[in-house]
Length: 585
Ligand SMILES: *[C@@H]1O[C@H](CO)[C@@H](O)[C@H](O)[C@H]1NC(C)=O
Ligand SMILES: *[C@@H]1O[C@H](CO)[C@@H](O)[C@H](O)[C@H]1NC(C)=O
Ligand SMILES: *[C@@H]1O[C@H](CO)[C@@H](O)[C@H](O)[C@H]1NC(C)=O
Ligand SMILES: *[C@@H]1O[C@H](CO)[C@@H](O)[C@H](O)[C@H]1NC(C)=O
Ligand SMILES: *[C@@H]1O[C@H](CO)[C@@H](O)[C@H](O)[C@H]1NC(C)=O
Ligand SMILES: *[C@@H]1O[C@H](CO)[C@@H](O)[C@H](O)[C@H]1NC(C)=O
Ligand SMILES: *[C@@H]1O[C@H](CO)[C@@H](O)[C@H](O)[C@H]1NC(C)=O
Ligand SMILES: *[C@@H]1O[C@H](CO)[C@@H](O)[C@H](O)[C@H]1NC(C)=O
Ligand SMILES: *[C@@H]1O[C@H](CO)[C@@H](O)[C@H](O)[C@H]1NC(C)=O
Image 1 (cartoon, rainbow, N blue to C red):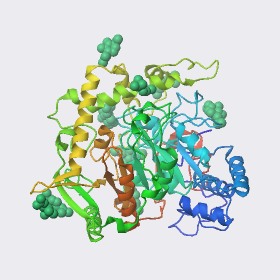
Image 2: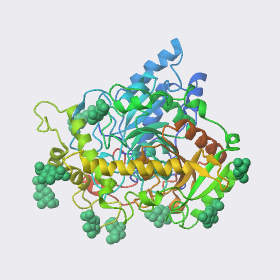
Image 3: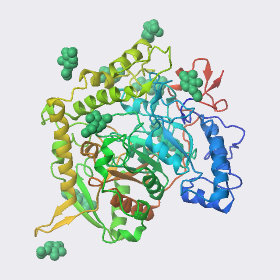
Image 4: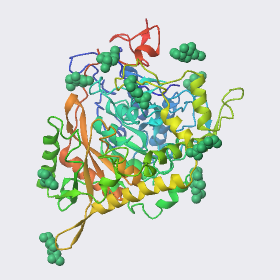
């Protein structure tokens, strides 16, 4: 089964959808008479408790919505939902996720009839030793696995140059329902689009470097990228042992917290989870969800340089006003805002904001070297647990080099229409793989020097940024650092880099809508394992801003993209699309 493409590729209106006005080309049908648009876990749970909806109804409605836009679903979803409905009637609910459909990014292995392939062809058809721990935990908590969501192929680890976020060989380009000619950003785009366009209430993504927080901003949703190791990564195709972490993308911080309560915890299959012992909040993460009153006395820092001064997005038309207005609102709500000129050492860590470093820092500290090495090591580990069916030529494949060679031999490049426009792919389509292979996965002096430097300097910057020293020597401990979450999440606009290097958490809260009708947001940096505090800060801000907007599917008739060449012989017109883009011509 293909992962859900959610490409919204000029998606056709199927029978259920009656286009009433051009401003709402894909109205969401009622579900058993109930409007489930933008419904949170709590709202869905309440309807199920009242008996107005069953889990089976919900699965049917979300499946209809997926078909209205794009996609395929877990063939077992309805039977799982029915069983959970019966259990509810007989024994009550297991918890807040009982009967709630959820989706996972296609790099998260599910041990069922789905394929998990991280969007590529090279792993397609293989199976892993056991289900991802997070999936097993959500199932045990009563969640109904609805399907796999599209992603940037290999979670953005296949290609680095001329690569289109949201593109995968298997399903093509994921589109942004706010404006279909615009990107979805970071690699969890499909999960975020699924939630935003009401194909499901909550989904899992993963982040190594920006893949949750950037698409969450661009689609106007909430997320929390945790300290790696707080939540098990077992069963998730690795990008980097030291940087990867799965996380929910959701309509509220409450929904995020509900998933943290289910997912966080020690797992014998992921040794990094042992480090998180002692860092779980006593009363759980949901207890940290607060209202705007909690902003009174909250201490928030603005790392002015470089984030609030020269970052290109904040200086784009209309954007600065929006961001500064939000800061004023926070002040008015009683928050203490600390305008920090530079967080200590930040200028040494990032090339302004991005995925690199200043030109005056020696090349041997390059963070890409660390990510490249960890990618090669990660695939080597992954392939030990991955098996192909007997007779499959890929059986026994054990290294990233062999994967890349398979891609070459199958002409499977993420090549493009090819005129350099950013949302198409050009060149080899696997330069990240090539760079990783070149390291031989050697975790020698060179690796530790680069990795260690990034980790140490980034931690100094974030920890130092949280400790504001007043003129009289008093040290104020901040509750979080606010950073604009740029709509593009591009290399020189990422809010995710420093926390990625550090292995520290980030919450992301939507704050408004800006150029090209796209949402934008704020990243909140915290110290290591400060997730409970970040949930407090982010939920208080959510309650104050209460931002939401309906995607208008701008350009759904005219957006041009990869799907035109993906399925030769198929046409893509407004009326002909159903699954995966196009109907047969
Ligand atoms: C998984 O992918 C393989 C290879 O494309 C395909 O033959 C198979 O039908 C898929 N499985 C499902 C359940 O779709
Ligand atoms: C932890 O697990 C990783 C990945 O499986 C492995 O490379 C590493 O050696 C393990 N570390 C320890 C201390 O066991
Ligand atoms: C923060 O300080 C900078 C100078 O470092 C100033 O230009 C900027 O206006 C200040 N911003 C706020 C919101 O106070
Ligand atoms: C691979 O692609 C190249 C360039 O498009 C083409 O010339 C070649 O015939 C293809 N090879 C195979 C095996 O399909
Ligand atoms: C690239 O191709 C697309 C689609 O054909 C077109 O819309 C766009 O203008 C082209 N860009 C450049 C820089 O030529
Ligand atoms: C990316 O594409 C542009 C335009 O096609 C090309 O000039 C450039 O060399 C490519 N970059 C890499 C790293 O191949
Ligand atoms: C990787 O291995 C090759 C061949 O064994 C060697 O030539 C190369 O120097 C190695 N590269 C690194 C970065 O260790
Ligand atoms: C330092 O200054 C702060 C802010 O003006 C004040 O609240 C605090 O009491 C002062 N501390 C000392 C030790 O004077
Ligand atoms: C959608 O994005 C395009 C650029 O890709 C822009 O020209 C257009 O104005 C945007 N549409 C809306 C309604 O914002």
